Image (cartoon, rainbow, N blue to C red):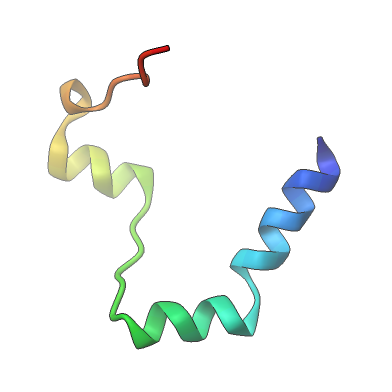
Length: 48
């Protein structure tokens, strides 16, 4: 499990990912910001 998490962290902190985010004008937000914007009621677990 820790290897998967490390792989995700490495990908998200890579120069390639950062460049792709900037090139597409993506604005990253935190869960706190999402809850503030959408409210907790809008956040549900996926079905399945």
